[in-house]
Image (cartoon, rainbow, N blue to C red; front, side, top):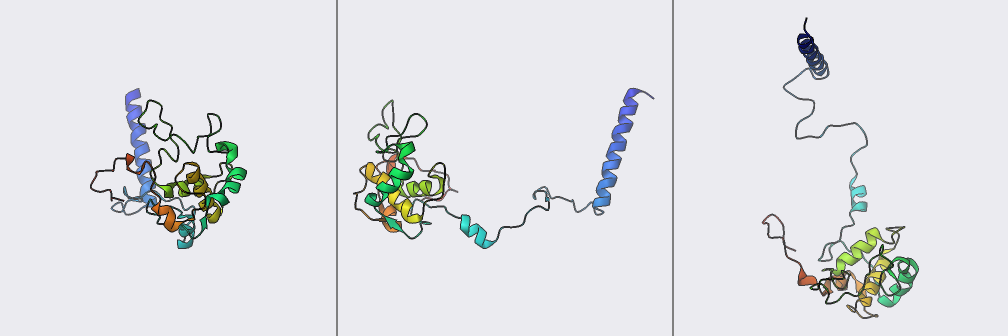
Length: 197
């Protein structure tokens, strides 16, 4: 028998073995083991409970939806910031080295050849500041700040940028009402399937 005939015979035997194995596992070929629309199942883990999903649902929208109860002022946030944030972002939000970005300054630079992207110059929503601090900061221990601490640090960062007064009380209602300097500097998504905010 030629090498080609051997190769064809080996391929046919392999296909027959796969078909026989599949039939043994799934005697009804009209119902495939895995739907092309359904991912394979590996019998590992379990569906998350409603409580587990709710505990991880920490998203905050630009409108403030999702912000928890709590409040803080820049005056209260100064101590938390100096202890937990200044090591990376500097005492006045100026950033440290090339690895840690500035949080303050940069006003009027976006239209220049050297834009300085900071919370005050670039970010469109104050609620995003709260959300980011809550989920990602401090860098080495993210998610460890309590809601009141996050409100206070958010207020302090906004204060460093001249957006709020040092004694302004920042909470879910007042934070959503803060108008950031670059709020109108973004182009909306024109696709019809994207809801307007």
